[in-house]
Amino acid sequence: MNKLTAPSQTPPQDLPADWEGLRTFAAFVESGSFSGAARMLGVTHATVSRRLQMLEHALQGPLFTRRGDDTELTRLGETVLGAARAMQAQTAQLARRLAGEDIRMEGKVRIASTDALATMFLAPRLPSLLDQWPNLDVEFSMSHHTVSLARRDADLAIRFARPQDGDLIARRLGKISYFLCGSKARVDDWRRNPASTAFIGYDDGVPEIPETLWLADHAGNNPVRFRSTSLVAQCVAARAGVGLALLPHYLLAPDLELAEAASQLQREVWVVYHRDLKSLPRLRAVLDWLEGCFSAQA
Image 1 (tube, helix red, strand yellow):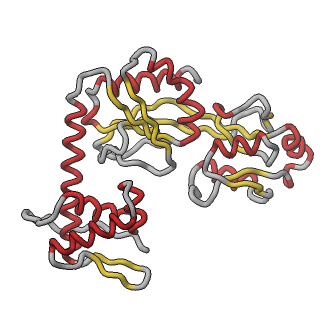
Image 2 (image 1 turned 60 degrees about the vertical axis):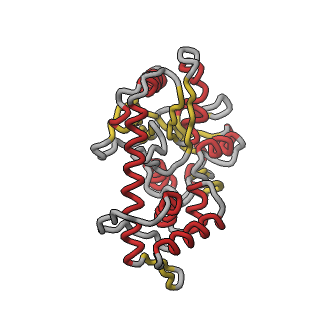
Image 3 (image 1 turned 90 degrees about the horizontal axis):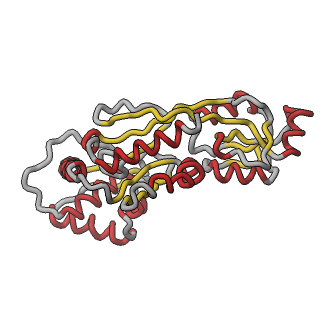
């Protein structure tokens, strides 16, 4: 099913529909399927279907049509989507403003990060933050997909490139160095015959990241024995002797040997947040902690 695009129509002023129906319709369009909308909203496939049917009944017309595997919005659907997204934007803006006015050094701070960085680098360093601010509640949202800070999917996001969105503030945290490493047996293989040494790589979900491009340039003809977007899984496989892997410095375990002493790749790390939250004390506390985590590795 093709992903549906945003409309250009002005949202209607008097829309006879409930917020849950509009929110579900927006999720359906964004994800491109009933099951995708169900995952986004944390409800069942049947709930999504029922809400959309009720929305169409309230509006007395179809919102989309199916043609084979494709789904197209009707004119009514485009207009309703405009209203739904306008309501989403207003709700998110209100949530950000309310959060920005909260001056207490307590409450939840959601950090979006990759699984490896959150699990193996940030989580072990949490005590230094929580011992100082025991009323903070830190939540990690771990995914390789970019979250929306405008919709408050997270309060802070750690990214490997500086964002261009003018509503976001970015602070550079530092750099992460990547090393080619593996078990002693695989490193010995590399030194004897680099062209035939087995490697560990990424799956097709991240074809353009620098790590994938480096592997294509330096080991493009080597056999790849295991693929995963999870660096934690890559690290475990490398330690088990599956092949050589390009891993960040914080995953270098004692039982991993370096194939090359020098780092093979460096990536800048940025933390970004919405400017509406810049005065939030608990966010500033977490920002200072993040900077301390990375400066200690410099």
